[in-house]
Structure formats: structure tokens, C-alpha cells
Image (cartoon, rainbow, N blue to C red; front, side, top):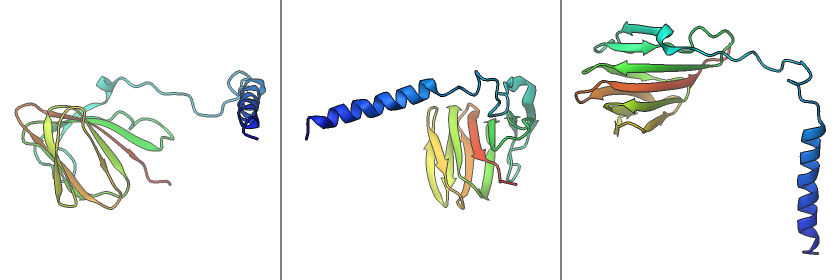
Length: 150
């Protein structure tokens, strides 16, 4: 009985492999299954503006995904200048803030945690969140979240 188990596993893996290789590839057959990819140069998306949710200080916003038709998520880079902050606000979706450079502090429902390069804050739908820049260098973040379905 136990000797047949490895053969069954190999047969199952072989079946999956053959099905994958023998099934016509949509791209190879000329069918489009998704919109064409979009490549964006962040330098074409730069705006100097106060940060959202309170306009505390100044920031440089890279509105990377704003011009993409049919997108389902937001993807941005934001540089919080010294003393700047994204003010406290309730989010209606999960959000991820990833730190590229500088130091700061993230707040979620009153809990505060430090941010440094390489750290990511995963924030949950319904939380009251905010981020403040700290230290001498600007805080550079990547921000991603889903857009509301419409």
C-alpha cells in the first residue's frame, strides 16, 4: 500500500505537467486575457503638495498609478519632508506602507511603532492610521492599497 503512494504522486505531477504543456497558451494563440502592461517613469508623476489627511508640512508625491485606466489598486511613492505627517484618518481598506529611506512613526488605533528603511506597516480596514516623519532625513514610503470596486 505505501509503495503505491509515490507512484500516484509522480503520476499526478506528470498529469499536471502534461496538461500545462499541452493546453494552448492564450498569449501564444493570440488571445488577450488581460490588459496590456503599463510601465511608468516615476519622474513623470511628481507633485509637491501637502500630505493628505491634515496637510501637515510638505511632501513630494509620486502618483505612479493614477493615470492607469481600469486599475484596481493604488500604488504611490511619497516623501514626507522633515516635520511632515500623513494625518490620522480611518481607512476603508487594508493598506501597506513600505519604508525606502528615513525614519518615522506609524500609528494604528492609538498604537505607535517606529519605521526604518526595510520595514513595512500592514494596516487593516477600519483602523485609524497616520504616519509622521522623524529625524533629519525625509521619510520615503511606498504606499499600496486596493481601490473601491465600482
